[in-house]
Image (cartoon, rainbow, N blue to C red; front, side):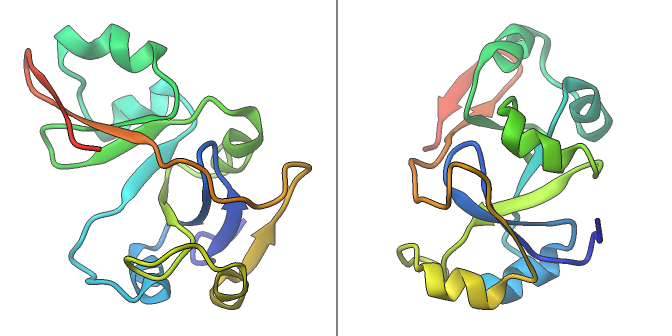
Length: 146
């Protein structure tokens, strides 16, 4: 797997673009390059390499599904437990993830096909689902962002 490629695949929540290159994602989405992307990992071990989870929230992080957390280092990270999606993530330390659409627009399959380098489609097909919840974690508090 090439880290500079832009992958179109069904994630655990919705159809999305994945890449290890955030600049490539920004160009595909036509959005500001300074706006950060969600980071997806396939295991808690890889999460520990990227950030430190507050002690008060460790159990919540381990047990929640389809949920992203914004950590104190300003990284939004989701641990993917879906076996189909995590299979792709195993090949990389992490991948940046975003929905497969133009910035602030609805999903368009034709647009997604044109922008992607590699299309990975499994038995589920490609469909627009509900985006993941995002929670901002403090030392003790938690705040729902989406």
